Image 1: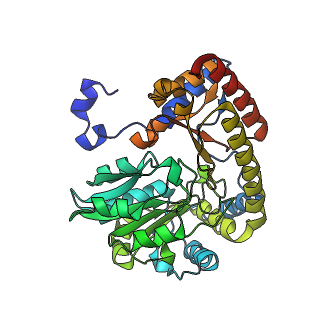
Image 2: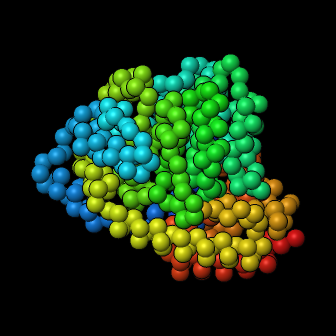
Image 3: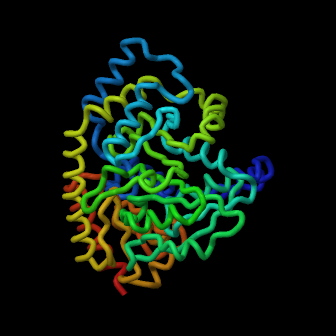
Amino acid sequence: MRTQLEKSLCSGRVCDLTPFLVMEVLERAQTMTRQGIDVIHLEVGEPDFDAPPAVVAAADRAMRDGHTHYTHSMGLPELREAVCEHYLDRYGVSVDPGQVIVTGGTSPAMLMAFCALLEQGDEVVVSDPHYACYPNFIRFAGGLVRKVRVLEEDGFQYRPEAIAQVLGPRTKAVLVNSPSNPTGNLLSPERMRAVADLGPWVVSDEIYHGLVYEGTEHSILEFTDRAFVFNGFSKLYAMTGLRLGYVIAPRAFVRGLQVMSQNFFISASAPAQWAGVAALRETAADVARMRAVYDERRRFMIRRLKEIGFGITVEPTGAFYVLANAATLNPGRAADSLALAFDVLDKAHVGVTPGIDFGEGAQGYLRFSYANSIENIARAMDRLERYVAEHLRA
């Protein structure tokens, strides 16, 4: 909670920001670790793998070769070309390098895109549940969030007809995230096409592309060019600390995004950008290996969570998350997922993310990340099973 002094000094747009609750859980867990408590982390969506060797070598080579200076504000031409090659090879869509703006992680790309797209009071349609930070990006840029509930029994997929019901004269965009955080589910190509046909701009967060274990992910660019695409290197290539992402933008917005990049960020890290080129062109075998390990963990975690009694109606097939319904165990306790998550941490020493972090549609749920070793996941599931038997089962 902010103090009255903080509220009086900080701008309203800063005071209106809501906490990222998974970080609150993580920070409590880190305090417990410093106290000597063995905490198993299933809360944070960060790969437990190191970056592939080709990525590390490229970053090291860039440093040794003197690539320690500013780059073009839109990013290295070599990296933007590699991004375009990737989208052509993977999705069959042609992207001009002049539409790619490289950023220091995907979050700055989101902030710039919403600032370029939204006037004060414009609306963006967002699924509920959704990635926790989306509403803060939108509101910080002056926009309003229009939420559309997506349901567990429908695989947490958008229903285009439900989106159509909330469209109004100030609706500027519909935000799509497939594979999704927190649900791990994919939006079908039929529904994606239907969303693209609704009329507003589509903002597509594709950061978990490549981490799909059943079915196939699709880029929104296969269905429309009235779209902003966010992507990056943190998840698929285990490069979170290198802070590298990008936005593919409609041509009319590129100059505005470039000017924002010049003013606010100057450029992304040069060594990280060279590492990104290597990631796109030299790491296919590493990515395939990591994906196979994730899939093994995914299947194990889903099985154990179901055995414990959590509800999982439609099994997630992408990203590295399981959003599990705790209300199947105890509706009353699950009604406050934040309190439940901290209780699990305090009593079972397992870090999990409260569903409320992702909107009212995920209240009563807990999100589990399988970006941890299968040995640690097994230990965490055993602890969770004991916790449920002693404290949660109705």
